[in-house]
Picture 1 (cartoon, rainbow, N blue to C red):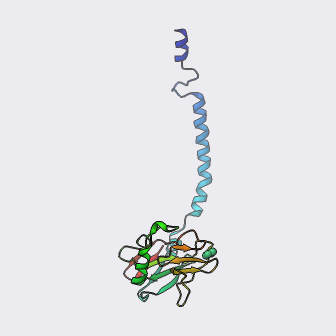
Picture 2 (cartoon, protein in one colour):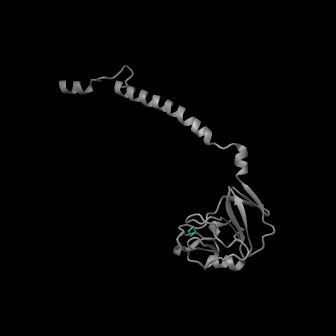
Picture 3 (tube, rainbow, N blue to C red):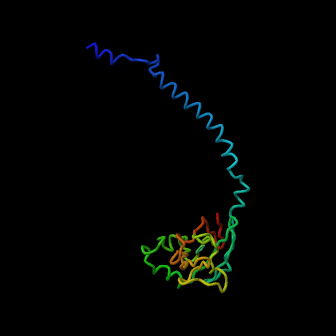
Length: 187
Ligand code: FES
């Protein structure tokens, strides 16, 4: 029983039950935490954008004049954006594709807003190395799948701006946007 007593005896415990070594560890972490906050806060503070900068970072475009089969190029955060009013045939073409066969599987519905499946809004930046694809301007080449064609290394996007051929790994990016009446607000 002398052995049991030795085990039960609180060795190196303080009066409050916290072992001295634990207290030292907690104190060290707390000090590090305070130091960490002091360093991190100015960085976070510098990184947070002011309200006027955030407001400038969205783009509003009235698309009333964009007829089916037409597209326009806009600028969002200094990068090109394509806004395309798909024809019923282009919508149907996008719907015919077996999504599971795609490199970056997405339906047209997943890339557009409900009730506005004809309005395809994407960044005009090739997902390979960032060139601006053709296909949004009048008379521009649309590639083998009728959407966009990137002449830099030959990426072809379909009528839902999904990558179908060439080196680009992803579909053209769909930015965050809202549609109110005929106005599209991107960002
Ligand atoms: Fe478009 Fe390379 S940047 S295919």
